[in-house]
Structures are given as structure tokens and as C-alpha cells.
Length: 431
Ligand SMILES: [Zn+2]
Ligand SMILES: [Zn+2]
Image 1 (tube, protein in one colour):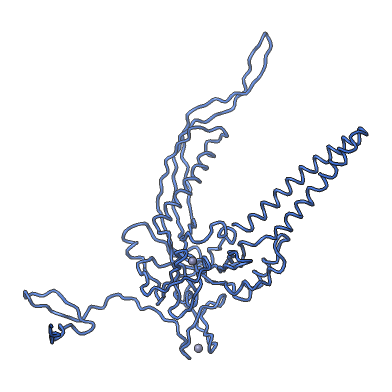
Image 2: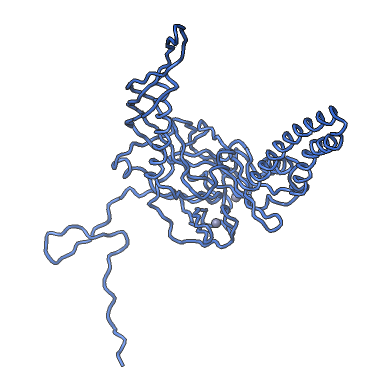
């Protein structure tokens, strides 16, 4: 059997000492580490009682839930003037990374969403899919770009409740009593990641442009006129500026819902301060800067194509070719506030989102299909009845035919109305 070795543990330099270049071979010199520009991360504890404090919507500060004392955030409201970066390697390296405060990452095993929360926060449900298979990750990905600005939450819990309940009570096609279903228990405030882009755009175009002409021609000694389109190759140049084009930094939220709770007023942007995130979830971006910029360029190209079309000055354009150039590209990583909830109704999940800046509500609502079908039947009934009466009295002559025709028109109107109701009902469940 081997004896456990009694070796002395290898010597290690005292804390704060690091190896520095040595003149003598084989000799290692340790010196106190130079003061690196390490940033102090902030912790959010109450100065007076040590309790965990959180950002209070609309208060521009943090409040302690235990002793009620408040603490201000010294961030500026900068609006659209919030700092922007160029697309160079240098600026990428200098852009701040991480969150500037201690945060814990939560990963949802069901949908893959990653959010960060304050170290002490207890979260058991995923705000994005409602699953409770949420794992805490000890290592926080600190190579993520730090947001430069955010819009703080201004809608508080009380306003939220009023707005969501009013929204749930709206519309006749949903089960009654929906606004009493206790949905608010699951509402979570989450900062969503966004990218904004600015750029100058130049588009050179070339196309066959058709102009409408009136021609006179003669047939058998008589003059007639007709219109013809004469095609000619033309070219031109369009310039425009793009400012604050928003691209979502996450796939996890339905873009349709995002559009419905928007737009956000970017004048409300404040410089990033970790204090705003205290007590709130922040979604980690899953669409990286590069991919977001590709998506933005795609959208800008579409706009450029329209601008070129307009520049031709004609409604008849064919074989349009375009070369688009981008200059002075700038980007920003920002956070926008939303409340998310998934609730269940008769075993099915439904998603709701509330704009944390202006309180706009959107989402899925269950449909009372019996009610919808009854309404559609009521819409079809007059046409069907009148048509039937017309058919029965057809023998009488005139009246019967009028009845049949009227019934037919009413039936068509009923069908169109019924189709629209059905479409609306489907949409409110899907989104
Ligand atoms: Zn306190
Ligand atoms: Zn999830």
C-alpha cells in the first residue's frame, strides 16, 4: 500500500502578488499586482437595515421593503442622445461588459431562456414559457455587452393590475369572469434586450422605367387614340438617414405581441445603472449584435428599394437593380421594460405582455366558442330565413324572387361578418 505523501504544499505568493518579468533565469519574482481598472460591482442592500432593496417603478430610486427608506439612482435621463458606438474592433473592446452588479443567471430547461436576477431573488417559474424547470447557474456570462441605456419601469404593480383586469374584461367573445381568474400572480417585470442602429444610407439604382404616352393611329381613314407605355433605362441615387432602428435581441418573445405593446418612447432612455435592475429580471440577449445588424440591414434594404421605386417617378418599373452603401453605422444595446405573464385557462397556457413604460396590454385570451358560433349563426339566420321564404313563395311570382335575392345578399353579408368574427376569435387565442 502506498503511504500518503507528507509533502509540503507548494509555496504560493500572498494574495494580491503576481509574477513579474525577471532578469535572472530560473528565478521567479513576485510583486504586488498593479492596480487594474477593475470595476467595483454594486450590491443592493439597505444602508440602514441590511435588507435587499429593489427599484421602484416611477420613483427614480430604490426602496427598502423592510424599513421603507429610499435611495436615489444617479443616472441621467438622456433620451435618444444615449451613447452610441461605432462598429470597430476598438470600440467593441472598450464597450463595457457584464452587468456592473452581482447577478445570478437563471436558465429555463423548457424553452432555453436565460435571465439574470439579483443574487437573493427567488424565482421558480420561467416568465417566458411558464415552466418551473428553472435552474440557477452560478457562473454569469460576463462577456456579454453591457447595455448603455434603458427605459426604467414606470408602471407599478397597482397600475398593472387595473390595466390587465380592464383588458381581460374587454370583448364579448371571451369567457365571462376572466378578469377574476387571478392571473396577476404570475406577472413578472423583465427588461428585454434590444439593439438600436443608426446609419447613413446611399442607394444607387438602375431600372427600366415606363412612361405612359397617348398615341394617335389611323384605321380606315379614321383617327383613334390609345395609351402605350414606353420603356427606357434610367438610373438615380437616393440618400437617407436611419435613426434608432430597433431590433429585438431575443427570439423568446412573440414579435407580434411586442409590436402590439409598442412603440416605446426612446426619449425615456436613461443611462444604464445597475440600480434599475435591482429586484427585476433582465433577459440576456440571444440575438448577438452581428445578427441583429444583419436583420437591420435587411429591413433598411427593403426601405431603400421602396425609396428607389419612388425616385423613378413612375408607377411602371421593371428590372430594378440597386446597390446599397452604409456609412457611419452606429449601434447601442438597450433594455426595454415589459411585464410578462403566462396563465392557464382550462389547462391551456396563454401569454400576456404589458409595456412597462406606457401600460399598453396585449396577449392571448381564451375564446368562448359557443358564444362565437351562436353570434355567427345569428348573423346568417336573416339571410337564410328570407331566402327560404322567397323560395317557398316563388310560385307567387315577383315577391318570391325579390325575397330570394334579398336573402342571398343578406346571406353573403352574414358570411363575410361571420368570417371576420371567426378570424378575430382565432387571433385572440393565437398571437
Ligand atoms: Zn431597510
Ligand atoms: Zn421557459
